[in-house]
Length: 344
Image (cartoon, rainbow, N blue to C red; front, side, top):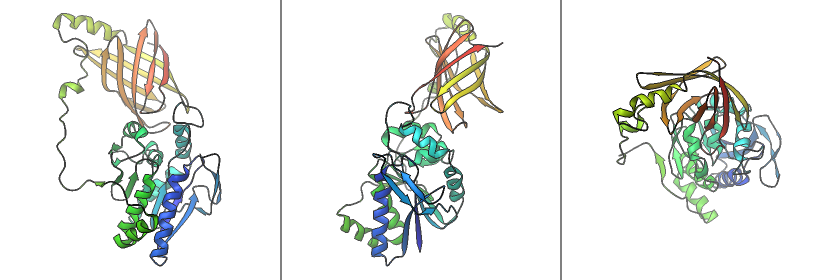
């Protein structure tokens, strides 16, 4: 028997979970109960409050990350804008910081388990560092954030990456579930469910197979981190550019005020032979900057962090004397304020 576990967490989106539940239940009816489906949580049986008007759904089981079958993670419902506790990023972040991340990581290592997500469910996994380098999709509002975690955003309705199947917006739960029914039980069962629901699965399921379409070539000049050519390439301005870059040199104690708390980060910046180099140290982790550039008297760079979640952040700062101010941003997450002082 094929086991389907739909994982609930506080703030989950109802349609993300209910639509797949109905599809799998209908498939079980047509397939002589060759499939079972239940709501579970990482914590065990309990009532779970959804993000839609506080409606509660009872989860009858505990997530078993070793049970062969399908594990499906829905997204969240909440405020789309802002960084309050009821915002979608905050809800997804809380889900990521539970036992769920470790359980899904265990499940992804099993040969006989498919992990599926609907809408923002892929962001729960991605922010936990489980999707780096893997093609995936989420709600269109979160595609930038998905890319900022190191995943490869694919603008498709459903993306199949073997043991990881992800769906786009809220209603894609129907398409993800119907595709998985076809993949695991066959086209005739999936077709019978489509007839029952009077709904036909939407879009092409993206897989990394077959011929690849032509892609634009990224120019090498777009990736330059040379301080002399980020604003002006005329040689007479070279010395001036180096002087501007050197204003950022030194070690800096900075604080980044994020929606999940304040982060203390030490920045080390140096300029040599017209090139800017930098590192960021948080706790015992030191990370090299990616593509630092000086533009309009502001220093910008990208940075891969793993704490408090795995993200690729984009920074932009300015300096007045010994004081640094700026922002750090990842995808749709609100920009976090950065401030700090030079210590050497």
